[in-house]
Amino acid sequence: MSKKKDKVMSQSIVLGLSALTALIPLALIARRQKPQRDIAFWAAVLVSITGPSTWVIVQMSEAWQTGLSSALWVTVVACTVIFGFFAGFTRNGWRLASIFSPYMVILAGLALIWQQDTGQNMGQSKSILDFQSLDRWIQVHIMMSVVTYALVTLSGVASLGAFIQEKALRTKQPTTLSRLLPSLIDCEALTLRLLAIAVATLAIGLMTGMAMQFGETNQFLKFDHKTVLSLTSFGVILALLVAHFRSGLRGRLAARFVLLAYLLMTLGYPGVKFVTSVLLK
Image (cartoon, rainbow, N blue to C red):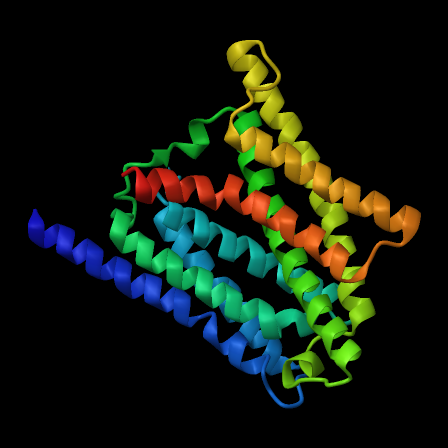
């Protein structure tokens, strides 16, 4: 039994490391002196999506795992897929790869570390759900939550890019990193576009969560930490969008709003997983 467990753990480490390694080429390609959206870039994007996606499929082949490591891997997959979409359908969104890809490597590294720490090895985690047997409202709620968090993560990356560009313009000292990123205007436009989509998906997530809660308790809202953080995040993002379109709010203040929304959603999604899977295990 012990040998079988060791074999499963070894396979888990190899697959996890492979998924992590698949993210590195994009981080290297994005830091080229003259970055281009060429075949090498798209090959790196494809590898960065395929590696973590394969690992998540292996992890979730038996059941949907709800631990911290799985949440981080799913976040990496959702973020890389959405990044690939925006890289293809926006003019300069692909340039965010220079700060986006290193962040994904960090998240994957943390996922790999906690995967071994909490015993989440190829379906062996105790925190699992039979996704197929769940109510449709719950399935939609889970998917919308993942997509929303990925969108807000990307908007946070774009907002960080805007912050870096604004500092370079203010000091009149462009850096190697600022030259790789989209312009300040493009970063702000990407941030707002991502946040607008995030508001829509978060609204769907909140409505499906309310429907699920009403079906279980005949109450639309249960004011636990996750609900409060989600509603607060929704309010912050909505306030930012309204302020931008009414008064032209932008720059460092807008970036702080975006990062605040990202912090709140991080506390409500992987933050809760960290407490339940690591601190209270």
